[in-house]
Image (cartoon, rainbow, N blue to C red; front, top):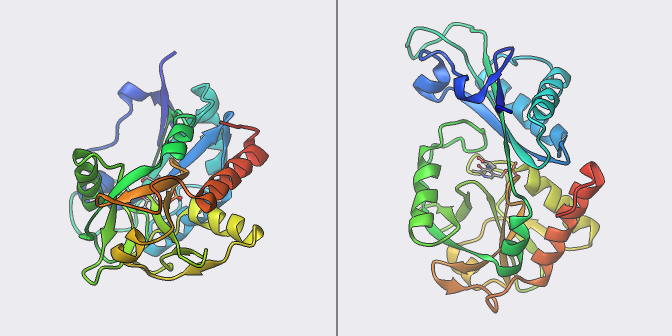
Length: 288
Ligand code: PDD
């Protein structure tokens, strides 16, 4: 069965799916996106993704392609058409198609969705072993709170991490503060057991998983502080972790080659990972 994509109102074979070369997503990265996890063929945390998408479209004055409920219907039809069970749904909205000019009139937005199978079970092994991160200078633009497809600095940082045998790159400001990962939010567990993650400023993407983890921590009476931390503080922390839709919670056991804690996933990270899998099970029935 050929995989199908959704492009501007049509379900088409993925291999033939295309947008206009004058689409502003291609020309200017004038576009926003979401990555949504699918378990048992069901969308996970859809409301959080839909709300963030709506906020991002409004922030950039890109017209919403359709109402949230209609968007969810298209996503579900695409998942069903691909017979996807565990998968990643990718959704992109661009400002639309126009002759290349920095200034654009009001346009009809382009909506693209794809879905690809994704092996979430592999994460369980990584969860038990932990992963390494490197740190790199944060060379992104000043509005990282908006989930745009302008990801070149993230792509280069992630590639550098992989080239150096690490899983993720943490993006660090000139003063040493960690903002987030190339495609994950960054966290530590401080000596007093407080779970710490940078506050929601324009340097940080408001992760849907980040919100779920904060909620789970508070339910479990784990203290949470939204404050900055430095690379040195993270290297000396009891635990470190990263979160995202595709991860969803992974222990970080090495930062720039320095061992975090005893080099093994810590109890708070393990508890939070279990909490997110519980959330997945409640919403979708899936357990890894
Ligand atoms: N990335 N920070 C950045 C820079 C991200 O790109 C992402 C997600 C996150 C975590 O957000 P969430 O929990 O909502 O997935 C934080 C997606 C998965 C990606 O670009 O593939």
